[in-house]
Length: 200
Image (cartoon, rainbow, N blue to C red; front, side, top):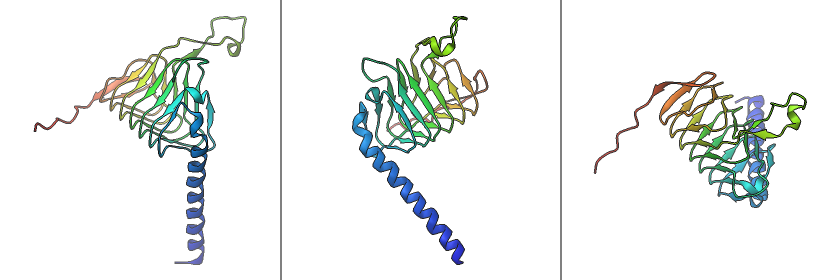
């Protein structure tokens, strides 16, 4: 093996180890600020967090760099809950004012946007920025679902267990369990039969 290749491998290996150590150390330091923060979960910096006291993160959760998790609620309990084993690739935004729930082992590709509210925009005399939020409707994403790159999930949507949403889809209505939805607005194009349960 040439010296240049060996040096390159050593440099990349060191970079990866340092990145993992930084993410783990950061997560251990900030975990106590959350409503819940499970074992072995990692927030990979840089990450933007707001309302952490109303955010619950399960065990073995990965939140990739560039993501933004926020709870806009000023009172009450947990508004954003992320289930055990969920993997959030990076540059993902999840914003909860009432209730956003991700189940166990949900997979979110890069650039996904999930929100249980929208900005008000009906007052033509006032900037949208100054009109606050409205249409607060809970969002739920079932266990084992997979959302492709740049998917947008709108308020009031339930995505069922094991469902798949294709890249760049805009989900405005419920997606049944074990189905594939694509497009903007997203529509179901295929359903999968769950594996038969063995009889003992």
